[in-house]
Every structure is written in C-alpha cells, then in structure tokens.
Amino acid sequence: MKRWGVLLVLSFLLMGMTCRKLPHPKVYSTDQLEIIQLRQGLYLHISQIALSNGSTFPCNGLIYTDQGEAVIFDSPASDAGTAELLSWIEAQQLKLKAVVPNHFHEDCVQGLPQMIEKGALVYLNIRTYVELDEPKDNSPYRVFDSIQELKIGRKTIVNRYFGPAHTSDNIVSYLPAEKVLFGGCQVKAMGAGRGNVADANTALWPMQARAIKEAYPEAELIVPGHGGIGGSGLLDFTAELFSEK
Image (cartoon, rainbow, N blue to C red):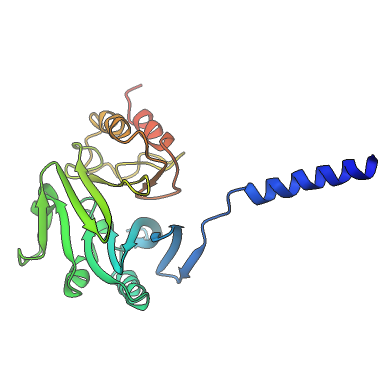
C-alpha cells in the first residue's frame, strides 16, 4: 500500500508538471530585438528605446501571420531593431502586408519608412496620420476614424479608437481568432506607474480602459505597450491607476 501511495503521489506530480503552462518560447534575441512566440502565427516583438538619461526601455509590439502574410503592430523603437525585424520576416518567407501603429510616439512609428520601403501599407487612426510630421506620399496610408477591419490571410484584425488616453490618437487592435488584444501604451502592465503622460488625457483614461474591457470581454490575452502581458485585469489596473483618489 505504501508503494502504491508513493506511485500515486508521483503520478499526480507528473500530471501537474505536464499541465502547467510553459513559458512562451523566445525565437530570436539580440541587443536590439527579441521575438517571442505567443501562439501559432502570433509573436511578441520587444525592442529598446533610448531615453534622454542614456538608459533604454523595452517596448512591445506584435507580429501576426497567416497564409504567408505578416502584419506588424507598432514598429520597433529603433532603426536597427526594425531592420532586424524585417530580416526575420524575410527569413520566415513571409510577405509584410501592413503595419498598424498604436499612436504617434516614436516607440510606435520609428520604423515606418523602412516598412513602407518594403511595400507595407500603413493602417492608422486619422489622428495619428495628422501627427506624423515627416513628408509623406499618401499612397501607403489607410486611415480610419473610429473602427477599421483588416484581413490577413483567413484572419481578421479590428483596429478601434475609443478616445483620448495615453495620447489623443491611441487605438487598440483586436485579433478575434486568437482572442488577443494589443492595447499598446493605452494599457499598463500590472504594477506599472503612470509613465509618460505628456500627451495624455488622464481624466478620460479610466473611462476608455473600462470601455475597452466592455467591448472585448472575451479577450484572453492583453498586450500592453511596455512590460508584461496579462488578462483583463490589466484594463482594471489601468482604470484604477488613473482614477481620481
């Protein structure tokens, strides 16, 4: 009986180890760029932005692929990181179809010129388009005011503007087939501070966070602009962070 008891305990331990969620695998890593697989055909890219004090800060973006096509959400925050990401996409034999910037800050749009050179279309909020101050040919840009659908292979992407929060133009992008929401800098990682609020509307930010949660209650994975990914609790945390005390 003792022997069977030991075996039973060991079997439960093994089952627990098997069922435990494994960490997301890192498929590419340099000083400029990391790429982590979240799901089949969906990757997190992390690049480093240089701060005025000489330090760097990690910035999140997504790569979504299907049937040989790729869409990037936020460019890497440096030209070097963008070049590496474009090389990685080419190495996977993927065609870069589009890039979707979350808002007009450098950590979202730094690599747009390089991506446009590769033939990517840019899907963005009209308010973001207005904020881009470099000379530009209108042809690569596909602007929207409130909501926009984009197809990649057999999959759909929904880009949506809820209102001012981190910036006046920030959007979110939802991937219905994956139940994944890219919130960008409008969503804070658990335990984060308020961060850069120079262009923010902190009074309206909590309302936008709650509206996003109400619009996508089925979202299982939420990706903030910086820091760790999580679930809908990130939206609750963001709303609380900016609520008046």
